[in-house]
Length: 254
Image (cartoon, rainbow, N blue to C red; front, side, top):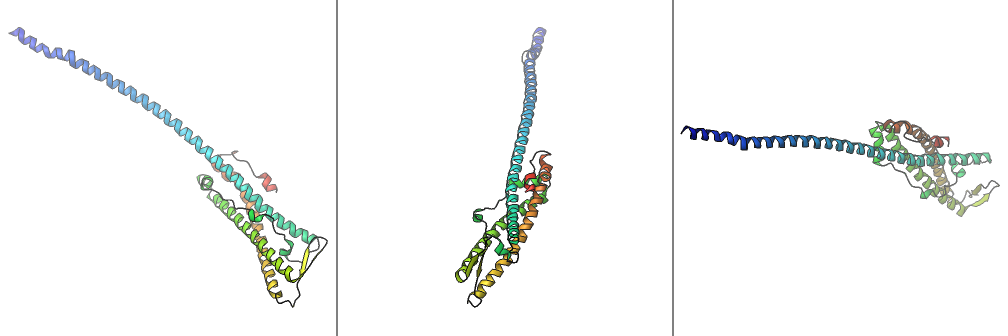
């Protein structure tokens, strides 16, 4: 009887040895394996994440540099256009004065700009302007927008001037007598008693007022263009870093 009881009591120990202990050992191995797998995967995930972030950072910088180069090109077009138109206007006035025609109207000293009707405004995109928001250069961003607006207005003014001058010239030529001097300057005289004399003179005076205003605005546009180009490097490199952009020495010298 005692032997049987002892045998029965020994069975739980056998179950512990044969089943539970291997099961616990198996679970332990599984837990260790899971922990190792977790840390390995976590380390790979962090490494991958860092590489992705680095690639994203490099891609963002490439996009920013590309946008800044686009600003440089557009700013070059605008600045050369504004400064060029202003220079041509002043040269035409100076030539007329040198040829002995200083007393004639400014609108008469200026020729129309050939092809001006094909000129198109230049606009800066949001991606290009965002550089200056990121670099805390909002004032420079506003100057770029203002300069682009100046350019658009000046093109419009020059186109309007060409139309008004051509229309007035046709109207005067239709009722007056035209002569041309050795310098190439033409003059048309209208009889004072002509029924359309007052109308033509009124239009001539209005064109002169318009031309003076246009000349003043062109001078302001020239100054603004020079100021904005001179500030380009400082404002752009505030975000992209020193030496990242070309300068505007050639534009300023013009």
